[in-house]
Length: 345
Figure 1 (cartoon, rainbow, N blue to C red):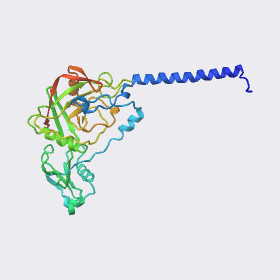
Figure 2: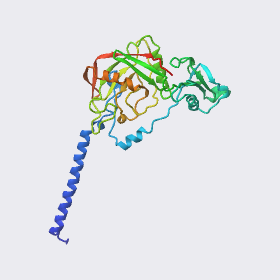
Figure 3: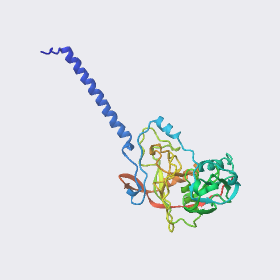
Figure 4: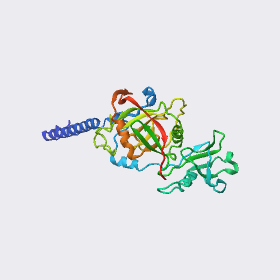
């Protein structure tokens, strides 16, 4: 026969049960508060195909601890990329017949090394032959060149039969184009070393006499969730509003070819990036670490011009819902076009 439980033992057992129930209750309350203060955790990236041709950027991330955010920010990729099957012409500053390297990245870096920290670049374009069979004795040749106008690079040839890989390099104060709107001109510093396909497309747009069809159609301010420097306010949600202006860069009369995914760094205030493969794009008004590295960034608005983007974000809008995400669509779209900007070296 088993031993009868005493009153003291029963009391201790009751206290243990109450203690466990208290811990469970605390965990449930903590979980509920986490959901309330971090609604972004249940929202995923919106695909372009779900938005009836608009494309969309919503609240895309999950909660990140400060330590994790700092670690992610420190992993920015050092870029030096080019476009295969493209040969750029131009005056040679270093002859490839006398200069051979092992990769297109090395050729690109050799060109970047000829740029002054705050001055012009002696080399602004490079051409590399990296296919042993197709190049034959020219394999490894790295031609460093200087364009007459780096915003209108001289193309000699392109296509699958071309054995060369080419790219552009812009100095700190070069490679700037203007995104002209009725509210002012947003000057954009292009990133050809990180997003060469994207930049070549933008340079083509900048050479058009018109850009009919290109416009902003969505505008969302920083609200009270991000400060004027783009930093997220602690405990605040991540939208809506989502701190961005969004539009399309498909001009009437042109055939848009999808842009391949290029370098996708963390979105910063001023970043200009494609949604998917384009032509939908956005300019961020805030630092969006929560979006991870999901978008090809091909340029950045100069800090002194961000007030124009802020002005557009304050224009009258109407509410709409894209893939279960509330967005603010401009009542009157803002036409835009790219233009060349003359800068001092």
